[in-house]
Image 1 (cartoon, rainbow, N blue to C red):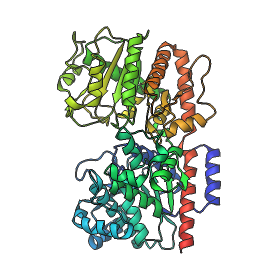
Image 2 (tube, rainbow, N blue to C red; image 1 turned 120 degrees about the vertical axis):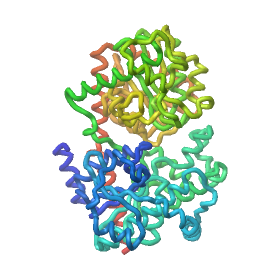
Image 3 (cartoon, rainbow, N blue to C red; image 1 turned 90 degrees about the vertical axis):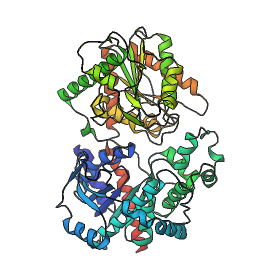
Image 4 (cartoon, helix red, strand yellow; image 1 turned 135 degrees about the vertical axis):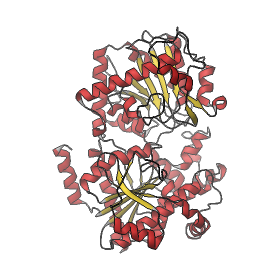
Length: 565
């Protein structure tokens, strides 16, 4: 960490009330399913530096006896407490380290046994907080039982290690940990609680149900919409957690507005998401990994389409959760269709790196990847790399067919859907997401609903310029930075920010098309300068800068506990 930044953080620590212990939990601790994993795993290093082995992450033990690449088990860690928790409190837990920079302590819990107490837990939440768990679906039960177990673990740690005279933080992420926050509020008032919503359940659901969020924003009532969208359980849990914790935080100003409108609670502090630069390779290692990634993209595209592709093809991608409208996947396809119609001078190969339900890699593509010669014909349906379970009803495949993305030899734009988690062993690329991201020339995230927007931040951290929108928290932050939000006369500035509304879908697609066309015309020197600008902006979002917001949140929550005591 830079010495000047260290000095500022030390000054803040000396001037604020700081914790002796931090217990933090999320469904995505050692469980990579979304952006919260990146928030916690990249923030771990700076927290470990500030509070060495005083930060404990708690996650779900989903892998059981299977090897979890994120988890390094250490049976000697917290051994006495673990024995007590198992024998006296029937907690089924494992201890170890998170396999990320900083290697923080991790506790994984098997929450399945608590399903037997579900009715008891739900009755208590109804009696105490008015949470109606009967109107819930999907992952509500799973999340709630995990959160209940997390609350028990935090209570057990607090009691066993006699931390009553210590300053202890419990940081709970997203509605899925809402019951843990309320459990502690009810039973352990000596722990200072922080609850972070990364996206309100109502806001996400409104957008996911194709309702206009922004033009009708102030007309929506959160409780009313919860009944209409069958979201009563999740919404009331999220709302009560926000209302009862010592410090309520959100990740961006735009999500703060949602929280105030839908939850009736203005965030106490905004805690924007940062990134850890040590995740990005440097020097020759960077160049080697970039070249490896480019070759992987080109090889898969060639074997899938049966087409010889130029080494200097413009490699473009979007990624994230499979939220077709919210993440702007529909606009991405529309824009690439327009690029194809415009016949760019340089070949464009675009990828949709969005996981969904699959039966594994395409066997015919795997066989081709074993060959050293280029096939003379494309594979059937040469626009997806893995076998989709719901192929006939898949929205991405439907739109690709609608626009006739057959990826034929004469097309200057190829568009390929990669519906698998890129964890290093997907069967086609066998590289992680970051190991592939580094090989791209441009990323596009035309989000309609995006509380923060980790994907564009990750992109520029890996020196890949990006396109985002003003409906993303990251886009708003980037616009505020002096070095972005404007164009030089001759080229982009690393981040292109598009104005998006409820109704300007086609304008957004056209703007993206024009931007991609410009990128296809830049020479190598211009691209090098753009990539440099992108990286420079990402450094302003290092956790070394953004951790100060968390220190403020810790102090805010701890002061509440001091007043309570």
